[in-house]
Image 1 (cartoon, rainbow, N blue to C red):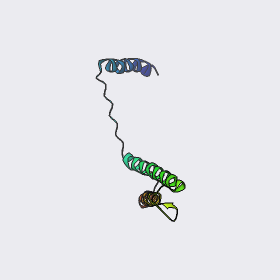
Image 2 (cartoon, one colour; image 1 turned 135 degrees about the vertical axis):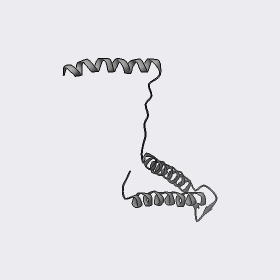
Image 3 (cartoon, helix red, strand yellow; image 1 turned 180 degrees about the vertical axis):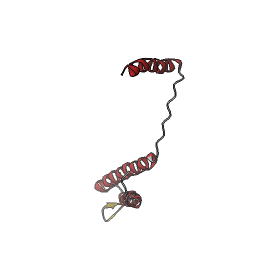
Image 4 (tube, rainbow, N blue to C red; image 1 turned 90 degrees about the vertical axis):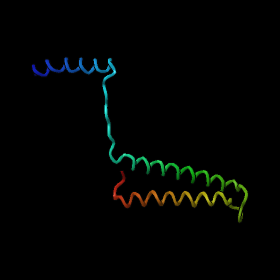
Amino acid sequence: MADFMETVPSAVADILERFRDGSMEIHMEHRGFEYAVNRLVLGVLAAAVFMGSSMLLSSGTPPTVYGLSIFGLLGWGVAIGMIVRALWAIMVAGRLD
């Protein structure tokens, strides 16, 4: 404990001095993080396309076929494709990271 009490104050003072000088560097590395972010972004975009398409369908925005907005139907198809793609990526990886 005595050794710890002698070492810590000088180490803390050294760290603070490096912060003041601007010579402190912190390096961080994220491994595999981009896959989770890509899936999250794909999910958010799919939800946005799905909601926008639902709004087009419910308002009957022209052009319509049988009272359904063509752009709303196309958007639903795109959103369902994005959702299937995200689920496929998760199933192939075998985990939810």
